[in-house]
Image (cartoon, rainbow over all chains, first blue to last red; front, side, top):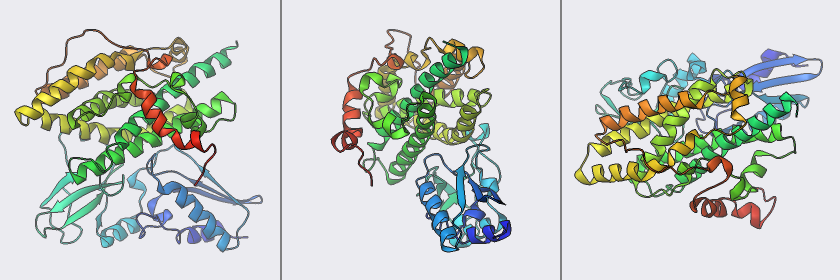
Amino acid sequence: METREQIFDYLQEVFDPEVPVLSVVDLGIIRKVEVDAEGTHITITPTYTGCPAMNVIEEDIRAKLTEKGINNFDIKTILSPAWTTDWISDEGKRKLKEYGIAPPERSSPDKSLLSNHIKTIKCPRCGSTDTEMRSFFGSTACKALYVCHACKEPFDYFKCL
Amino acid sequence: MSDATAVNKSLLNYLLWLGDSNLVLGHRLSEWCGHGPILEEDIAITNIALDLIGASRLYLTYAGELEGKGHTEDDLAYLRDVMNYKNCILVEQLNGDFANTMMRQFLFTAFSYHLQTALLNSTNEQLRAIAEKSVKETTYHLRHCSDWLIRLGGGTEESHKRTQDAVDNLWMFTDDMFEVAEGDKLLVTEKIVPEMATIYKQWEATVKQVLDEATIKVPQRSYMMKGGRKGIHTEHLGFLLAEMQFMQRAYPGAKW
């Protein structure tokens, strides 16, 4: 029987369909993996409530485990504690930046978001802080749209949740 | 009726109200897809629609479980007629122009934000989990529509006028968001849901703060139309449902 660590290794090969450089482990949506006499139990949590990738991700996990010869498993989805970008691993943040998406800058949105506070985000391409937010909502719910005034390139910022 | 049964029945009613309100507003926003004034806004509006429909799925799935008749979120969304929809009537109002859409969005989102924040303290674990999940998204929504109102209100004479018209036209539907159903009392006693009067005060303060900054006048109280939770709707909801439910009505059980 596979160990917990092996299952995690397999899950490292399952990628987010919308941010294909991040594995489901990097993304922090795998909340728990348990292996016991009855099989493998995996607990996942959605990133956004309306994230259309969630169903695909669950299917991909099933396909990957089946491919690895594991048939006796179940996947449970939980809502609480709610997913936060703080759970994206450091490795995940590094991969995001390499991919051209500015990684999230610390902690979840709070009341400060409602006042006029907007974080300064570094351009993932040239590193300049001379950037401007264009929209809180980017190509997917999890990203905001920025533009860099130094290299004149637009970029996605993985916003804090 | 035992206490537990009465609580379940009231909670079911409450969940349908929340689920339907999010679903109907999500659908309204989706009508903007491909029609946004600028590309960024087209994307923002449809993103928010997705979040609202996502929240609605959580409420309706839980409602189906509580009801215990084997109804899924889809059954509840696609197979209930207009009289059984419990959404607040504000959200079913037509998109109108962009100022009207943003004002409707703001009036509802400010309410939804304070309600979800209060539900973080619910004694009901599932309701608390849903609130915990969606309030983070709602914070972004509230920032988004507040920003727009401030920009439109302080913009040109035309944008200011349209924004003022929007709030004047929509104001009569706002009290309906705070309507209390008979069973809510029980839910408040059990600390499952907050007192609506508290949410109203918080909503009023947020509305005043943002509209003041947008140089838009908060309308005077006058006739208020109510009845959403009882299934009494304006004419617009029927047309919306006819479109939204078409596929499941014409081809029952259709899947892709």
